[in-house]
Length: 342
Image (cartoon, rainbow, N blue to C red; front, side, top):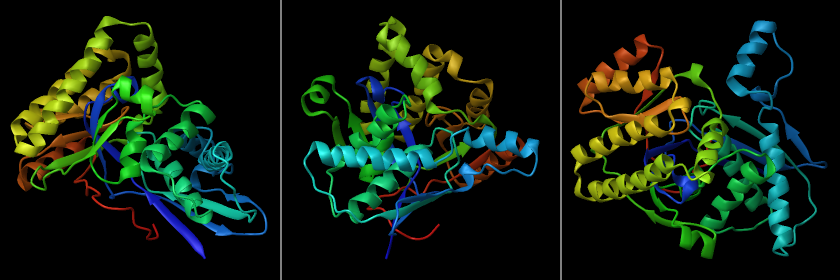
């Protein structure tokens, strides 16, 4: 029997990038793309390379293109790190594991290194597969923490909890990383919520902006640790904007949500100017030029915004297409993850 588990890209509607700094955010996952991990019992423990792990190329230009898209390390490291931290998690809690071996492989259609949580999706799917293989159930808050530890503690990637919470819960989530609550319980205050179907959201991205989230978070972490006043003020304001959007979703006050999205991006440009590239700004500016409120949805390379109607969406699609930008209407996941083949 083959165990198949999926996880989906994450879009931060509001509040990012304050999730790693005791802030607040609202995020969801959408299944237009997916990462899938297959796990099946075999005599030896094995990891099967995928497209990101190739070491043979047609020519030097293809090597440069592949490294630009996927970096130097590929995806196998994510599987290995997931297994290692899963075993350590079980040992720490005196959970006994059977001694059967397995082979693990992954596939993903999530655009890479564009702030859509593609790496954590692979890790999330891996841990879910391990849970089933060993017949272990981990609570959602603990599972999000475990997934984060794979990246932060095992792989040294600077990141926050937001992506993993959204991917673990598989529904839109309001997250309050209240410091007192975090220090007492080890996780934040998570509230599942509904995003109204008539809130017309789009996600747009360009593949020539691939940059790992560690670039943004590394610099922001330094400023936060050094107590830079502008950064501390920004995190407080991002939290306030998240509260406003949370209430506005319930009241269907979409004009207020648009205002908050615009302010979220303005604030980011003010305090993270060195990590908001000209091409990232350009995507938001193009959306704004057609009257669509937009902001970065992650560390960079992708934006989220609001369009008014189908005619407006087609205008955005045409304008973005002329600028080598893809755009989709995100199909928001509102229930448990499915297990179809990619």
